[in-house]
Length: 141
Image (cartoon, rainbow, N blue to C red; front, side, top):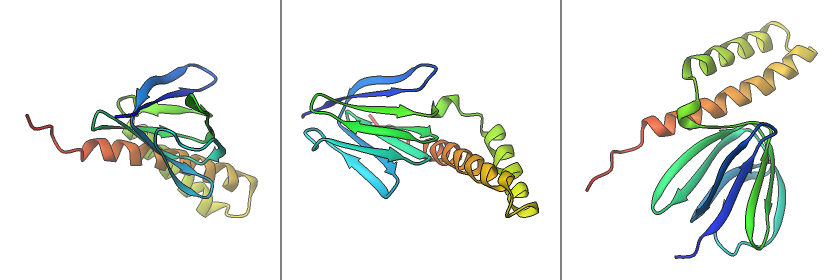
C-alpha cells in the first residue's frame, strides 16, 4: 500500500515525522482527507483533532490551528500547537473550557470574549482527541 511522509512542526519542536497511510484534518472550510498522491494543496487549519492512520491503526492528535501543505513528496503541518493524546492533561483542558465559557457569558461583546472563544476551541480540540483515544476499541489478536 502506498504511503506518504507527514511532518508536524510547531515553533518548539518536531511533533511527528513518519510515513503514514492517511490523514484527516479540520481545514477552515471543513474536514480534509489526505491520501497518498493527493494533489498539491495549501490551506489553513482550524483547532481540532488530527487523525493519522498507519498500518490500519489510528492515532489522534490535538491541534490548535496552523497551516497544511500537501507537496509531491510529503505533507507538512505547521501548527500553532499540537499535542499527542497521551500528552493531554484532561483536567486542565476541562478547566480551560470552563473558564472560557464563563468569560464568554460574563462579557460576550468584549475583547476578552474573543480570546476566550479561541481558548474554548483549543480546549475542545484537546478533549475531542482525548475522548477518541478513550473510546478506542481494544486490539484483538
